[in-house]
Image 1 (tube, helix red, strand yellow):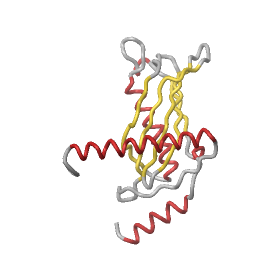
Image 2 (tube, one colour):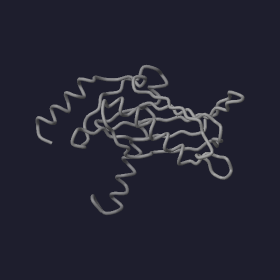
Image 3 (tube, one colour):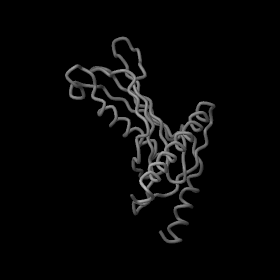
Image 4 (cartoon, helix red, strand yellow):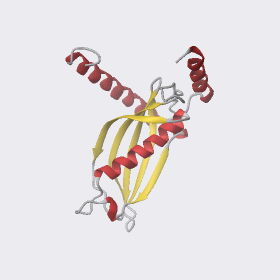
Length: 180
């Protein structure tokens, strides 16, 4: 990337300015049908993971103001099964940002249409990188949390990022250096 492209990317990030998590938050909902299920009537984990990646990708794209790619699924927890006939709500918001990357937290809830009760069924943390027109990483706007909960999520995201980086470095050292 030449100097004009670098400056353009910096200007683009600055033009968008810092964003609050609410500005890019998204909720998807979908009725879970038999085609999403296994033989026991539970929804396949892969179906839930696809919805999670979709919602998280939308939140990351909104924050970045353009295309993003999933870099990692940092953590995925299945707490309760989702059943055929449930409506699934997938809530995603940006927890923290780096220079070109973003961590998005996702919470999945299943609603029983008869009783109206909702159950927290899954949680996940995904990392995305924003891309420029040539498919290379580009800077993203800063994140400005507004609530105590958003500040807590940001602080916890920073811990997860440190852990990811330390794990990557430990593996690199164990393998004997970069590129092995």
